[in-house]
Image 1: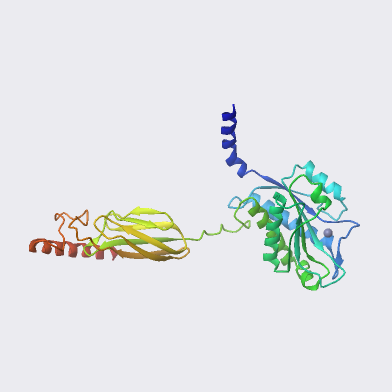
Image 2 (image 1 turned 180 degrees about the vertical axis):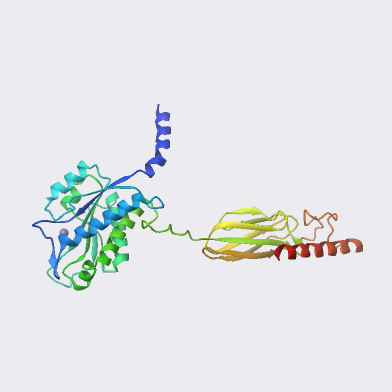
Length: 340
Ligand SMILES: [Zn+2]
């Protein structure tokens, strides 16, 4: 019975990874509670706008199957109404939310107070993991002071069953911060930062709905392995990324999907000294290379195409050397034709 359960769990695991996640977004304050005020703005208005933008992005991400994740979304308020702290948590719990994301803006009497901070109830939790990503994405998006990842015994964090975060966008009482809060363009960036954070939280590559999938950082490598006689068939070409293949009758090889950067390419072939070269792989481009091997002086056949009986440049008869020269000339001509 235990074995059966284990098998069932294994079968279920892949589908769970792609399951739709229920995200409850919690715009702070509302109605007769404006939240923080300053610089001509009210927190309740700013955070509702960012929350709605975030929900729109999550829903668009769900509708767009090219990338991103699948989300069910709900908001503790979507209009300018007062909702108690207890009601916010109860709503999330009734929704059986997977994550609860509260969005606020800071305010302080001293207008010099500024920056971004994000809270979870405790360290070492899923809430803390999401908190760290929200904070990192928001600091990257707005480039304001990073006040850090923090813990707090806030009611909405404590009473919500789902892993929960409470984000403070910036200080509505600080001129620099308020310039971000007051800009629709910047509020959209904040919403995108929240989207990226929740995507990364679920190990989904950050994806903006409606955009092409980001190209992976890979390039291609093609080349020919030769020796002094011409192409080397059956040479083993191995990349430091682990990919390996044998050269064809023309000595050619080609790899795709190689991680960009300087790649070490090792070539081995019977009867030849191994060789390693570095090749620069650029994103989306095909690098071409010709790698020349030196034949061992063992007298072993150097080329499977070689029907002249394994002639070598050392110790061969005069006729053998002449044959080898003709063979090499023919191969060079063949290569020239193949490339033209
Ligand atoms: Zn607030």
